[in-house]
Length: 226
Image 1 (cartoon, rainbow, N blue to C red):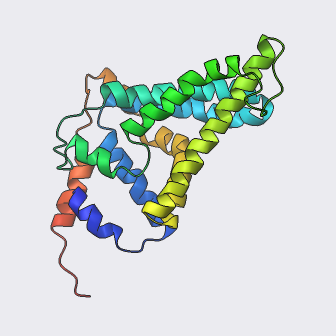
Image 2 (cartoon, rainbow, N blue to C red):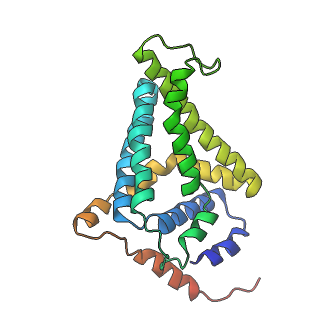
């Protein structure tokens, strides 16, 4: 399925489950060609699942694991290993895919990661964060406040893009995307479980045979009169 076809299909009303399936499928076939990227997403998904489990038990450790290991391993794959050349599988340029991406494209990710990177310095010079926190008196309290700041950053990043999609797309698209992001660790674990094995065999790029087969099948679908 080409991007041009997707634009036409986006006008059709899909159920929530169908729209979630489409967003997951598009995310995989457009942005996860590199086996290294896929393997890093597998690592990220495992860390995020542990993060979810630890949030109630030890929120500070959970947030640190989520941002420092899970988030960075995920983004390193996109920034450094995912091909930026013409996508032969989906017949699209990297620039076009970045332009139509539902969630955070590389530009938005750079902004988010930059905010995350400077936030420890902001908290250091403004310990109360303009009244949001009780100023830390020792290192452990500073780390706790930082973890809470990063937790709120994650919530804000999810909420802001979701609401933004309400206006530039529609409410369902925003809610579907938020659901996709929250459930990505479980879906990525299932999708990329075998990626390290392919990588060890020397396969750096996923041939995406399944994506090409779906495109060929759709191109040969008979026209249906409405």
